[in-house]
Length: 212
Image (cartoon, rainbow, N blue to C red):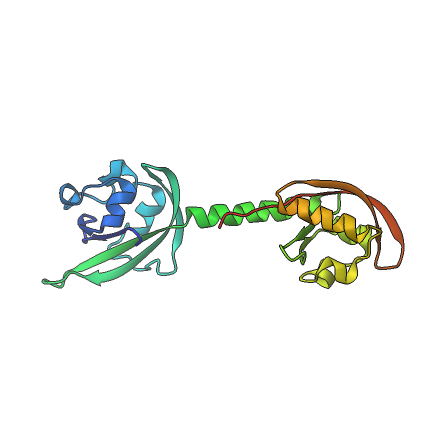
């Protein structure tokens, strides 16, 4: 569950959920009635929060979310901040519900994926990424220049469907067995390009096991 906190018209805590307490190291009972900007060692006392909550309830609620970095006991994390106008049960007074969705890992994964794509695209060596069935998943620009096929032409296809090699069936089977054992295979080979030319290549093949 995402960290939630409910604040009154003076910016004081009316309620927090367990997720907020765990994320920011806050005990619920002592925090009640304290200013939003004083709890968690002032972790929420940042300019973006102050500007957004300068008017309570906010005249322009952040329903779609606003990215904001906050310091937690686990270090700096990036949250998607949402605010909504609510009414306090019992007396019907106006309150503001603040939701903080931790998107740090999501951003980190996206950043790593982008860096990986840029690295692959900038390589001067041809790179072929294959799945367990030897179907093409990655095919960088250098592979396009060397072999003639574009990534769109070969993605999802088994390499033996379009790429002819001078390697014997026995050598190919031996290489596949080495890969299944988790070993890197290095060899010389001849490949036929899309346009029918043969090119001599030195290749290095290694298995990559992703988490999960």
